[in-house]
Image 1 (cartoon, helix red, strand yellow):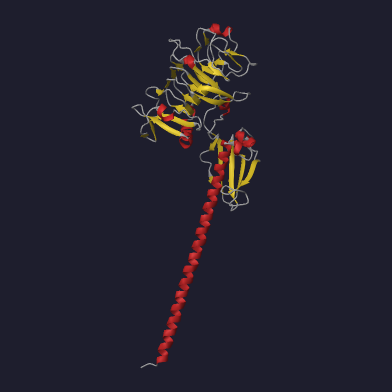
Image 2: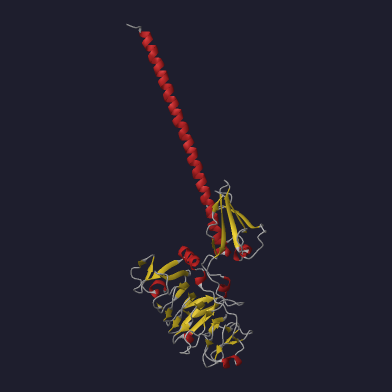
Amino acid sequence: MRPLFKQEGVAALTAMMLMALIGGVSLFVLQNAMIEKMIASYVKRQAASLTLAESGIEQVLYWFTYPEQSPNPVFFRDPPCAEQMEKKDTGSYFDYAYAPFSDSQERGEQVTLAIHNSMDRARACRVISTTHHGKGVAVDLGRNPMPRLKAGIQGQGTPDSQKKIAAPIFVHWGDILYTGPVYLGDLVTPIPVQETTAHPAVDPYRGEGNIDPVLTIKSSGPILPSSLLNQRSNLYQNEAVILKIPEENPVQLKSFIKQYGRYLTLSDGGCLKEKGMVNQGKCTFQEFFSSEQSDGGHALVFIDTTSGDLFPSPLEIGPGVYKGYFYFAGDIHIVGGGNGRAVRAKPPDSIEKDLKGIQLEGFFYTPGKISLEHRFWVYGAIFAGKGFIGNGTHLLEIWYNDRFKDGDYQDIAPMTRIQGTWRTM
């Protein structure tokens, strides 16, 4: 039998070794947990910094859309980097530090924004957004793909010369542009007279004595009948009229509208679908978009076909009140009629005025034909690539919104991200 003290010594040694082992493992686990916590904290901080930096880009886009709410309304209303500039110019036009998730710059994470002229693309702004942790993102912003509407009415002049349908002639505060020969009717008295000293008109045109300070009617072909030319000085034929239509860049335009607006398709049965689904209780354009209320923002809408072709038959625009910017993939038929509503309008170089009876605030834009049935009054513009037909062409009357000529569309971001330019820093 071995002595007892030897057994106790072995047990003590074993216990000490076990405790050391447990202590080492515990220390390893603790150290590993601390490292993982530090890594998680770092990853979290990096992710939060990236999110903050990205929020800076969104803030800049918001300021471009609503310049009056920006720290520099003059800059954001007309950014110099959106114009053609020398690529060697690398100067920073605007720098501003702000805290996107706090009430002041002294609290919370701080983001520094810098806007430069893009070195890679003309007419583009390069926005760099960095946090105080050094994490940042950069992206080039360019003008949105919406075409600049430079006249109250644009379209083909006489799509059906055999029927001798007179093209619309009533535009306040802007011009009318036609391609090809255009038939304006056999009577000269309805055609407004340009009088530059006259105050901008508010009342509808009422036959003889129509006066407008701006209106001219220009055609790339002859104006018919030619006798009208001797009686109106604001008629110009054989001019260099070029109409810009969405087909020049349909992918970019559709992509922009899908991101910022509503994209619908016209089914074979004639119902509008949104996201491929028929909206319960809504089928027609009128049911989707007519509203008597004027306090909502402008809609941005593209109505296409599932095949990408033109509409098989004209899409009917029923009587109603519409507010927005509407693109159509084919012919449309405007029923018109109704009372319309009052809107606040801004004539060129004049104070704001109230217009009554307006049925569209914004624009309709189609590469096809527009047929008109009853009275249709617009504050904005109308574009019909293949011209106007129907018994109501002389009942179309437009008060042109001259902000459109600069691509300034209310409620629509004037600048958008250029694909392929987003990068982290």
